[in-house]
Length: 235
View (cartoon, rainbow, N blue to C red):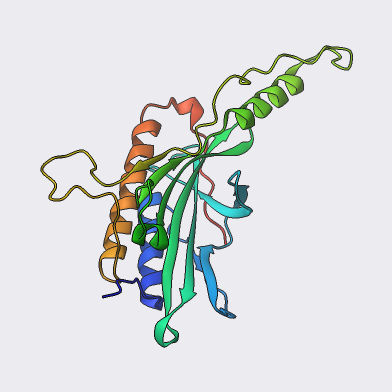
């Protein structure tokens, strides 16, 4: 039996409701193209800013709002559908990307991924998984930019500084499983999970609430000076 998550307006509304509720953005919208062809993407539509993962294009993002407080963390969403049997679109990939605001730039922090094809195949990567993508080189570029902007002295004759993070390994290829791979009580232990149209929205709702809870924990330890007014979603 082929286990699939079928596209429907109801599915999109349920995903939308989970994102709105968990991340404190009650006006958030997901956009679906009218011309869908053999495949299409449902994405966050009309966010107040744009950002990009290092391995992808610019995407609309909205801030994660915690108890009416600015969090400094932003999210995006992308779901890919392809046409299958009986001309029915099915979910092939879904991802929530979280960005961390450093200076004035939104830097990729982590991504929650699920890929149907990879879940069906034998591979080393667990599905679904957490994918941590904060690259040292990108942070170094921001640090250098902030340092140059704050300097009151001419810099054109200064020697090129030694790379701060040149010796750090880029760990962006590491994937951490969302499933339990090491508990012996699991029979059998599993690293791959497929979803159907009924259980995917339930899992997704739990995922968004978990991410929101972790961000809320961080924000709860921020000083009030670090928490300016929030930026509301404005499509």
